Every structure is written in structure tokens, then in C-alpha cells.
Length: 379
Image (tube, rainbow, N blue to C red):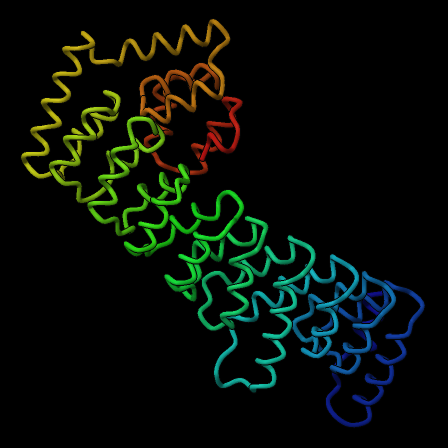
């Protein structure tokens, strides 16, 4: 059938042959065979009116092809934006989402207006997957209507709002502060905390939210501007928040006072991380070294061997579960973690340490899965 279509729809230039091709296409658009109509709908060299006609085809399969066709006239896309078939709107969302960043100011205003109208409709679609596709495709785009970004940023589904909240350059501090202050699903504030630029005002709001995971993400974000007073208040709470300890010891531009306080409560393994930093003021580095010596004197060991033994005992007892691994991550106990993952994944410990030190998301995720751990722990 594809050979027939290529022959009937070939481009023979203008004039009588072109008219024959057009008339043949009209006949094929009404063909009783869905595959014939779908094959016609997939072609990009068919006249716009034929594609528009097919946008109203009774078969969802044909309409899905029209939705994905880059040559489909935008008026037909507008029609498909409210199609009853979820897959049609999904395929249209992929296409429109990829077209929007390519729109230029030189293109006809009418084309831009219709495209943005379709975008707004899809951004409010009843199907979360359609809205998610739009959010992912335009999250970096600075030339979309702000009200569309606002709609996506306030979506009730995290898979929709998170990409825009983390990446969109169109969200102002006022927008972000309003979203933080309003009721939202878990994970919204965390997405804001990961933005490439987080102002001190937004950081203050994140810290005041009490969202433990969002604050951990804020502390781990080196570009987040955190006022010294705000950091001090977080350090006050940190002894009871082990998930904050790793990002705290890696936080850039720590004051001597902050280093002294952090060194007083983090685990020895994290003290070692702090000790290895080369950007600390001389006085702060001395404080850390003294803290390491004190901690070793208090415990009688440097921690490495005991951590490995504890992990081995837990494995033998059947208590080396996801919670135990999560606690090790929270307290920054790299030695326990390496031994635990090696045992659970049945790998040599040096291999596990190499994976962890690689900081490769894919490699660490694969290691976590091999150890039978969930995605949350992998992250």
C-alpha cells in the first residue's frame, strides 16, 4: 500500500499532474481502509486542506498521525487540542512542545497566537501526562506566555510542576514565594530549592517552610544564596536532622563559626570530608583537625573498621535493610555504606567505592538496584 501512495502522491510539478495528485489525495482521504488514510496523514507533502480534513477522521489512529505531522496546519492542531482521544492529545503535546521554542518574532503573529492558544489548552489538559510533556518541553523556554508557565508551576501533579519550578526562567521571586507560601504537594519546595539561581529571599522562605527534604536540597545547592543568619538557624536544627549533615559539610563559604558548630555534631566520616576541603579558612581547618582528633580519642578508633564490622553484622542478622542504608547515608558514614552495598549487591568493596566516588547518577542508581534498594535511596 505504501508503494501505491508514493506513486499516487508523487510530486510531478505544477499543472495538470499536480491537480491529478490533489484529486487522488482527496479520494484517499475518504478511503474505507484506515491504514490508507493513516499513510496519507503521515505525509508532509499533502495539501493543508487534506490534512485538516483528516484531523476530523473518525479513527483515532488517523488523528494521532495528523497530530504528530509537522505539516499539519495549526488550525487543525487547535482542533486536535481538545480531541477526545488521550493519545491524540499526547502526540500533539510532543509536537507543540518542541515547536514552541523554535518560534521566532519574525513569524506571523497569527501563527504564534494560535500556537500559544494550543499550548495553553494542553497545559490545562485533564490528562497529567499531556501536561507533563508540555512542562518538560518548555521548561527552559523564555518566550512562552507567562500565564502558561504559571499554570504549570501551580499544577497539582508534581511531575508537571517540578520541571517548570526547577528550570523556568520566567518565574520571578514573587511567584516562587507565593508558591512556597501556598498549600502544595510534597516535593514542590524541593524543586524550587534546586533552581540554578535561588535568591536569599527565596532561601529564607524555604528554610522557614520546615520542609526537611527541601532544606537538604537547598543546602546542597552551591548557587543558593543563604544568609548567615538563616544558615545559623538551620545549623541549630541540624543535630536532629542527619540528612542535612552531608550538604552542610560541603556547603561553600562556611564561616569559622559555622565550621566549628558543624564539626561538633557530624559523624566522624563527615568530619573527614570537612577535613579534606581545601577552601576553608586556616582557622576553620584547624578547628576541624582538632575535632577529628577529639572524636578519635573519644571513640578509640578511626571508625573505618568498626563501620565495616557493623555492616557485616547487620547483614548476617538480616537487619541490613533500606532503612539502615538510609541512616548511613544521612549520617555520611561512607565506610558503612560501602560495606553494606558490597554485601547486598554481592560486589567487591573496592568496586563499590569506585562507583560511589564516580558521582555518576546512572552508575550509583544501577548499584542501588543491584543491592535491592529503591529509587528514593538511589537519589
